[in-house]
Length: 114
Picture 1 (cartoon, rainbow, N blue to C red):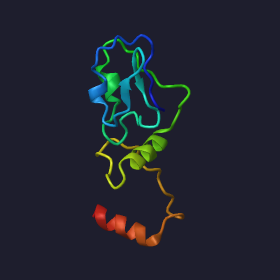
Picture 2: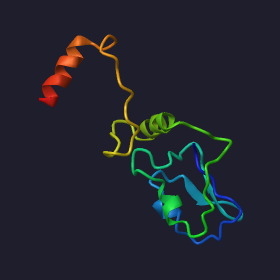
Picture 3: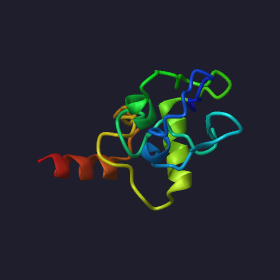
């Protein structure tokens, strides 16, 4: 889900420097969010930073760009190849059923847990 800035924006300039993806820029009249760069801070922070600092709460989810957290992580990995996400900022991996898992991987995971 990319975010977007509504026309309630007061151009206070606090959101743009908070965006780790450089997805926010000044538009014709108000700030705008590039949905191709917005990851809702997945990979950087646990919450979207622009939403946290906005004094007028004008940054909702963009209904035209609904994405899962997994899709946002894929976008993060595309924007930052080779850079792992910060701890606690990416979606938890889905559990793997033991019958579907690679036995060698299960041994590796078991050894790490011990």
